[in-house]
Length: 348
Ligand code: PEP
Ligand code: MN
Image (cartoon, rainbow, N blue to C red):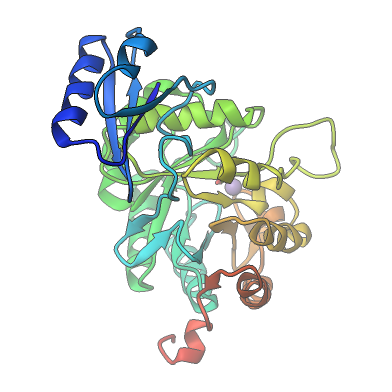
């Protein structure tokens, strides 16, 4: 339930409404906008709409038909901007995260980090705990991989996003990463999501392989309702009847989610397409469709990558894509890292 207060509602009136909702068994989340305050009531209680409507200072009470509340645009109209120091996701700038699927070795991670930073990425991606379909495939380097990733990110002045697969990994990943990635296979690992609700770092929540948009937003709600407001949604392709691409990259999800939710949305065209020759067109389309950022797999020797080599771009392809995005982003009123770092004279 959402309680929209009058523009001139007093603090005492707001507090009275909060008190009544709490008495009715609800948790109340307060959002103070430019002109009015909105109270989001969530929980197991059964607030009586009529009793709230008649309280002083209440403008309107809305039952929300969507089952997610804190993630919805109705609850918060302004887009959420998630800041990690000077990197702001959800603002005007399109933020690009890039790097290998998995950390494999120190030189591999270093080379990829340097290449993506030169091209204008702000965040290094890379997995140390890998969710592989087969238990016989490379499973990641664990903490050693995290260390390599963070060292490379620090060396290149990048932030780090890496996947957390399980509750038991939260503590160690928290030591190294700036952003927790929840992978597609874990989108409905509710125990993990609840625990990340108590984390003090942003969560990049990938859409599940067969998840509807509503289910995806409900998963975001698990994190938000735990008190962590910093959720970044990531469209990474869904499984359909089509077999020509690894997944079907659902570009329409980007404007749909932006309409339903205030949370930033980024796109992962690498897993969406599954083939490196199709990553650039999908990335261009995602930015044109309004994505707040991209997460892209880049490897300096993708033919020998230990995971997802076929969809990993060569650095030169990634450079070219970034140059194209520098034309597309301004055309839709967005900015993007203006020049490759090397040309600004900072790079090696
Ligand atoms: C990844 O980012 O490498 C990954 C495993 O992604 P997803 O969860 O989208 O499959
Ligand atoms: Mn991958």
